[in-house]
Image 1 (spheres, rainbow, N blue to C red):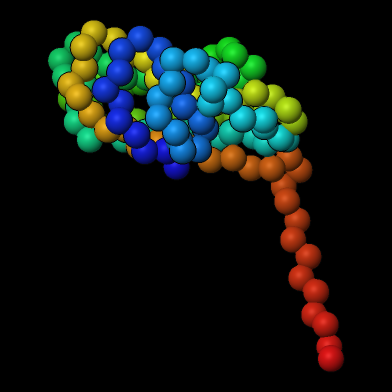
Image 2: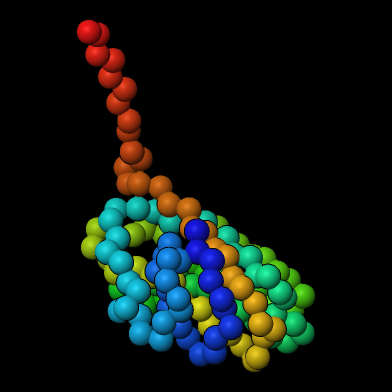
Length: 129
């Protein structure tokens, strides 16, 4: 879950888990992925972008935008994306934030839902002493 000040212009990047400030250099916030499937992105703003303005959060793989993106515009303060996007081991992953126009200053919280490929199996073992 990322939470950060979204008062930026142009395209900026953050770690997929949102543990850093927005950065103009993507390589400063990229992380190595492992075999996962992205199934949902949630995004919430503390203030709506206003009238004809918008903010977009996009999941990125290997320095390219993916199809997983959330655009919040007008009077809305939240949005989500649902789908299925494969992430391979050693993909470089992060999120990008772009704005259209000059949206109202806002903080952004976002979360990403992943499942492992194949789904992780947990084994419970009882040891008798």
